[in-house]
Length: 235
Length: 286
Image 1 (cartoon, rainbow over the protein chains, first blue to last red):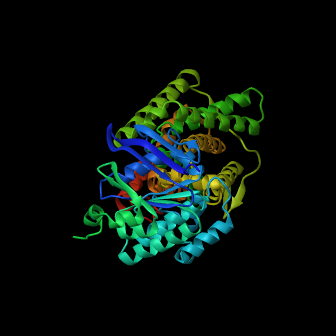
Image 2 (image 1 turned 60 degrees about the vertical axis):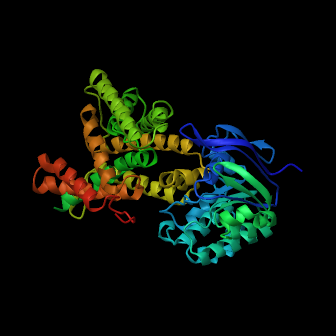
Image 3 (image 1 turned 180 degrees about the vertical axis):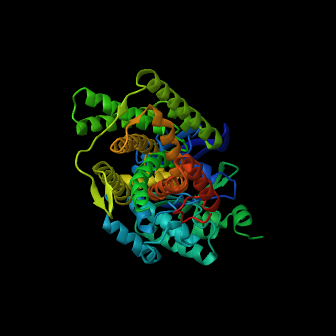
């Protein structure tokens, strides 16, 4: 079976200078995969190029047999590849409910999906008429994931979902992601919090200086001495 | 005094609609449409010419609304493409200059071909007394149209999926794209809507006083002041600011004199920027 997401030879950057160099990765339907890398390794650039927010300078992005490489971001979103950026990009002066309704654009909002989101994040149900700008970082992260789920995506890409979250909240965020994974949603998560990411994912890639330097199962990566030294704080 | 207040409300409701058209485009694209008043007047002239051709008032007004909407829509699809490729200050400057160019072209056209053409919509019927003040039917109809249009706009932006999509692009364009919203179609739609609103204001103003080439600049300036006081990009803010400024306008000319109203309006706008940079109704900390 062909992978759901297939990225080959993808290069991308800003002002003519590539930040990501010929990255290749694949995610099968139903899999949870992580990309680990330090600050500035190119995780965000790679994601932005994959979802159409940044025009790649080379390579291809395939999703469910379709070539996404030249499509604008809103078309890619409608094909069922949802992206939750680290900065979340919520609509600050809209309520939780309005943010969720927009997640279902252009379709009619599905009450069952909204119930599913409120089930996953009961906090959002409590705060449904609160403005997004007035919520805490953890709640905003929940809302960003919830908004992405409203379209019923086939795959969810998350860029550092624990950015700015206290350790307790980071664990909580990952519990929700694990539940989505167990429900069969395909996940690709970029992360610096490597222990959490390796626990969620079955496989991972290590991105360093814009190149994918290593790939393997989560056990292999957790056991790799270089990964341990660079990301797991093992001396 | 009561007469001045009622007059202020009538005027203010229309100021509000004038400001909404400008504020939507600015909030969405960073383009300050300095041709807003020119487009309003040009479309009023189109209505007037259509009526002179024997078309009844209501269909003629529809022609004007369509004309103004299409005119701005074409501006979005052509000249503004160059603006959207830029970011930050260059974008704002180029948008400003291009729209100033459009304003000059329309002013020139009006001066050259239609210097004395004016739209006048005389609404029949005897004046109706309200709170002891006799109000002309024209004023009352103009207010009714403005109130209905304002209420429809608020409902549209709050309760329809397209209206929410417009707000989403104003608040976070990338977030909107990630929700499957195409910012460029939203922009084209809003340019068309803004044009139609400009025409609507010119038409309601024409119910109380004739509208022609001499009104262009004052319309643009008023739209600008209302949009600034309301908070750029905010529909309900612009409507509220319009009403407030309409009252300030009538009361200051009642107590002080017409010559000073524009200065007082500008001062009100400047004060608002200092006190509440994001507009009157802003919920965002300054």
